[in-house]
Length: 341
Image 1 (cartoon, rainbow, N blue to C red):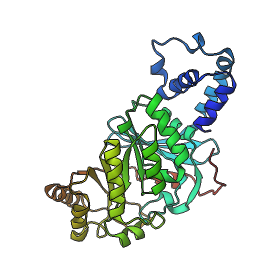
Image 2: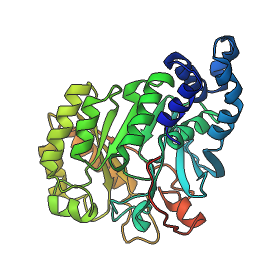
Image 3: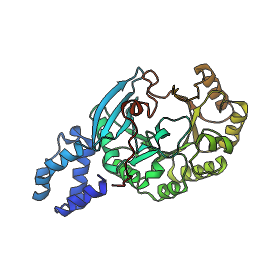
Image 4: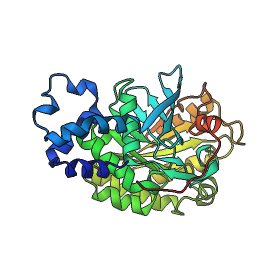
């Protein structure tokens, strides 16, 4: 179910835009939002009021909690079932954040990622994306939404941008706290620049060497790292938010002196933050996680050379919950026709 389809359905019942916004706002903000407010029955058209119980039931059924995996850092990985039985992962993050999935599987096929091993199974609709946030809000406060879960958001632009617009207008979430994470796609840069709600941007970099980046991200658009950074810098200046460059730190692969020199050359002076994340080891894959001491030294060295660098752990280490692992253990691949709505 897409947000646009919900709006069309409400409009057919006589709901004006302000009525549609009220229904959607009540959904995305949850029960706490209702306290102290006039009941919807005071002003919604009668056909809309009559249809609300059925609509509420459909919205509640968009995602269903299958299992939860809390971690000592305050994060909690959730395995969620969609209406057709496919599964995605959502992560409740420390400090009131949630990481949502935009696809079942992924077509990019990053070598170090479990999600893309089965390819892309189907798109997640805008309603299913927002439903992940609604479910998260039922468990704890949510003030930040990052599109860094399963899937490549730029490959599902219509649904992702529709979800971002609703979250940025009706969910009470600051635009800078909506984070669109992508490997880099020219269509995404164009769409983000024109959007009513412009989210913060995170770009998956992982290497400053074009050949190595192409090897690690085999089906990402073949943009040179320098070109990727130029697109990112333009959007950062347009949106007013620094670009977050994502760097999964792989022992012996992208943690050497040549890469660190490349990072300094590429990012020093840019409106940017480098988020360095030691790899969340997947037993089935050959890549390994460097020691925390080594990662800390790398981050400190980059900061000393003028690159704003954060070092953070990937949620779910102790539950073996790197993105895609929970789904892979719970559900064998089941390829079905792709659909947009």
